Image 1: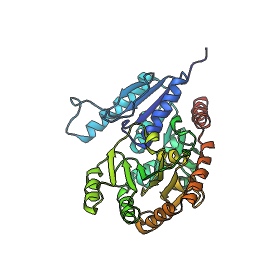
Image 2: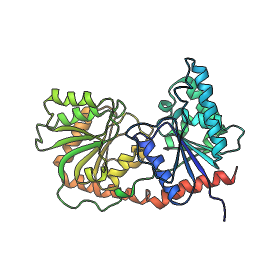
Image 3: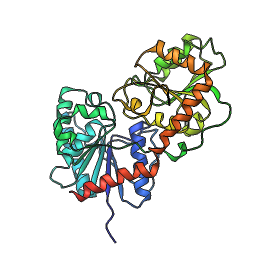
Image 4: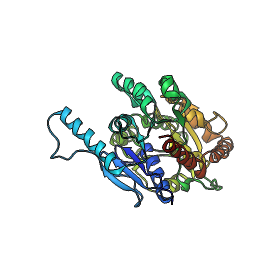
Length: 367
């Protein structure tokens, strides 16, 4: 029997976020297909995505007893620990996600003859936010076996020696979002889903909703998710006088069920890769509004006015007007939602997972 490809995956933790969900979905797919999968995370945190029981979990951070007051010593110990994990686990390929993890994957696997695929999940200039990190990403990634990017815009960040190794692989999406569009009368609600932080800019959405709230008193705004800005936004809703209509209930386990019947889905982020929440809303035929943010993911998914609406980043008046238009023109909104379901074809699980599988297998064959 031919030896199955052993895949090691590296990320900071499995806390609930877009990149983490993609990696957990990939781990589940490969594990169920019989591939040995080792998930290496620096930390184990609360509120993590559940991991398939067939996946081995390894923590790479140094223990409290191993930690010193010296940052240099601590880095060396973390470096050695991660390198020893590669030596003991002996994966056939390493798939790394996000920022410094990508650098560490390449550096700690040096001379071990393990191909490394690094995945940039967001706008590169923000994921690599210091001059030193940008220099390292642009040059160190040339040593990777493969580079996985989110959008065509991302290629411009890297020199030719990295671009020629780069590919775009689509995000795998949970099967629960592949369903018939809800045919009945929709709930009078506007929803958003995602981590509640500065980048998601839910304040923009709240202010846009406040601009139409008196005009459409039966509508509510529901923002699902956790994050450091949640308490501040709850207070903001109270100050605007809409605490009964602007709701932030926290995380929801079954997102598809929560948003299935809603009228409008909004993504208000300052930056995004290719956001899974937007893909999922479109798959279910929701009318979607998104900022046309870098690194261009929403712009690649949405044809403005056809299968959704694009608005400039941070433009509250523009978003307010678009929400007003969609609520006043429900037939047009429904036509956009129906058109959005066309996204399903390119995100069919067998196509998306198959592309990741074939890509990692090709790196192993070329080692």
